[in-house]
Image 1 (cartoon, one colour):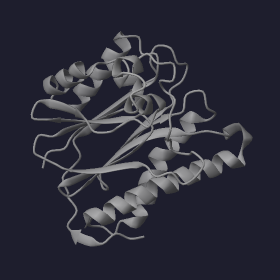
Image 2: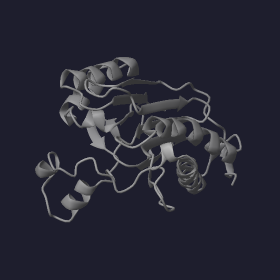
Image 3: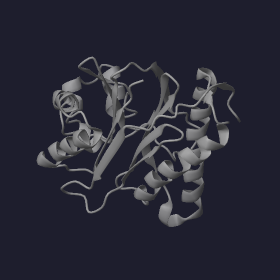
Length: 256
């Protein structure tokens, strides 16, 4: 499916940087991230902990998502509805590919990954996510979480069975209800927001948001103007707090 042409593609370079660290406990790093300047696409993925080939699943997302998305883009910025449909179908295609690969090899059986992707189309940003990798927006000095985790504890909180405070230490924390590579055609979460001058976007894995508090994230994004410096500070905070999981932070100065 090719998207409808509407306006010229932005030619300005991406002001984005990312850092990924294996943390203090894990033997390897199953996180991955990428930024595609031509597509204006940024992706973060976190291979499923304890599942076979989690690192490979995360890498497949960062490689296949831009490859598949590029096939549907005709060289100009698409209309909002067309872009949302294309992004949603592309994430599903990547999920099917991971599921196919895992079915063909017993060593990869059950592999999967979380994913959060941001795609700038003109003056709007489309966000797609599955699992508990997150997107945050810093606007006007205030930090806002854009994504809602696809997890058991979020459902428990939503149903009033546990509190937000209880969710932070609940034994089901980390158990996902959606991920890329899961059986069945399960669509990703999808939203669109307008971009304002000065907007900063943070994409990260649970290795960051699970140990670094929101006020510390906000303070870092306010204090560190360069994406590289902000990422370095955020990851160092996670490591300072013990980083029990892999840590990935990607900061994108959106602007206009």
